Amino acid sequence: MVEIETASTKDLSEAKYANRILQLSDLNYTKSIFHEIESVPPGPECVIEKRAVIKALLLSTWLQRLYFIIRSALMSVLAMVVTFFYVSFFGQIGVILAVVMGVLIFIVGLFVTRLFDVQIVKVTKYIVRRLADHKKIRDFIMNHL
Image (cartoon, rainbow, N blue to C red; front, side, top):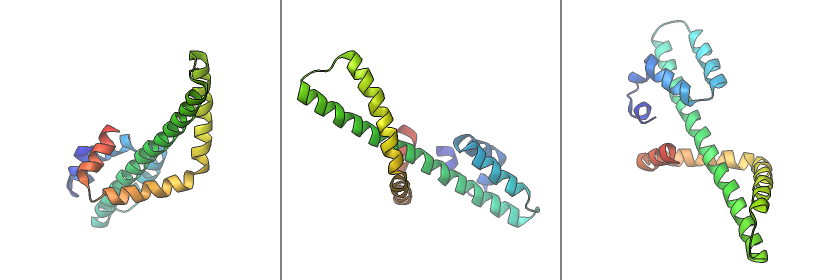
């Protein structure tokens, strides 16, 4: 990922970068875009379009990763709040009850995050735009979270 981000625009048109981005992105989306690129007649416009598509795929990858991070964080906070209130009210939690609660909270978390999917996508796009100016923070989030 770091190698792709630091590559020059000229380098991004090479096949090895395209393969790396292909591994990071949604496979069906990436294949459909590459098929569209192949239909463009060869020439300087083709090279420019390939570079633009590779950058778009990289942005798509960042959006997907950040979306997953935000959604996972929301589900974790939901599980923490429910568990905290249960333990605060009853004083303890057994292993079997913890497993059952974990499964139920996970299912409810999936449902709740799907209800707010549009808002999560908006926040994700906003964060990606803000992270474009902060390379160190972006690298940390994308590579370590």
